[in-house]
Image (cartoon, rainbow, N blue to C red):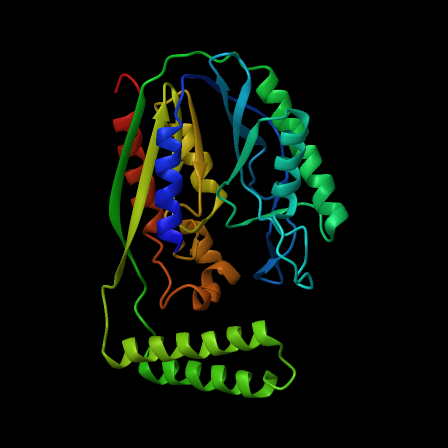
Length: 326
């Protein structure tokens, strides 16, 4: 059903195409805060104001040939978690409030939010709908300030490039350790089952399934495992967007942008799939939730530390192909 609907959307967009003008820019904005803090020799999920984060928003503005606003695309890294785990409603969280505010200010405009590399970045205020709205409205003001200062032009060359690389996975643990994983997962499920709601039961079942898969790999003696990873780039004139799958750490975006041959480069994560967390090489050495335990919700064994170099090199190659004059 989803594939069919996406095809319909693509066809409708193509048939409804029209001349337009565009411009891209960047301005100050900070919704996110680093969430990895060293405590007692370990990395905890806690606000770290001194940690790395992105302090800007990338904006792409598109107007009709007549000058009427058509669309605003915005990119910034921060988990949409202003609403806490007790919320059981489907919500667009703070990005939803931002998009609605921008659209309300300019009738006919479509506002689109692309999540940046927020693997280690939470939104900096929590919890509740009022907080989500406040964050969204502040972010919308930052986007509007950038968009209003842009001067759209009618010409641009569109370029697209992609490359699939094989990311190395860590070997499964020894068989005895893998059996312990299964035993602990089953014990936790049994202990929590009666009090658990539907969602938690699905989670408990999922962890058992993950542990069983890890055990199967261990018993098979699996080594040198890899996972395919698509690095994509799209450029419009001297503005480029890089797409990376997974919950990518913010350092990737900052490094890719700093070395890009394009004048402005935005990096969107959670793109073309989600393989789980994609930490930096330094984060692997530090440990923490994203490195040590989150993989049970996404796959089997965790990425290896060599991942960062492979992804950054692939991003450099696809950017070289799409950036004008290269």
